[in-house]
Amino acid sequence: MTETEERRCPECGETFVAGKRSRKICCSVACSRRNWKKNNPGYYHIVCDVCGKEFTHDSYCKRYCSPECAAKGKKLIKQGKLEHRKKSKKSTSPKRKKVDKLAIDAAEARAHGMTYGQWMAQKYIKGK
Image (tube, rainbow, N blue to C red; front, side, top):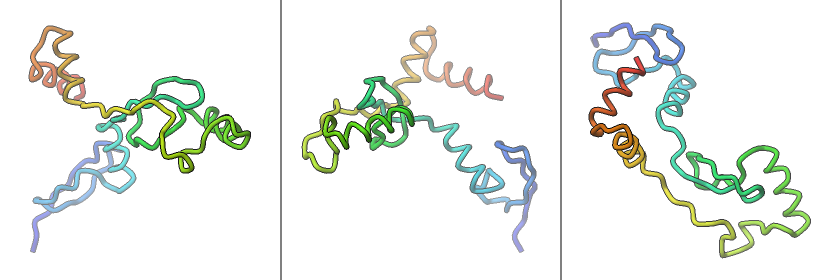
């Protein structure tokens, strides 16, 4: 028989039963996804093809910063003023660069006069 323990979901606060050796930390798949997205924010800096605004997203395929720009972009594609990505071999948007979360945290630590470890410890304490 496996030993079980009662755990508390970090997203909704609901208690659930999991095996002692289980790596399960959330009560459901929906809570797991919310928890993952909260702890893993967007990794890519992307420039909107319509308005030129820079935004971050976890998918490099994202093309527009908002639903409004997406609607405008689709109209522009139909009018032939904006190229559809699948038709063109060369991308018209600037090169998208992957953001290194570690480098961002290290830069923030330096800006606050701390080491990376001190900065992460402070963020961890504030999160509790």
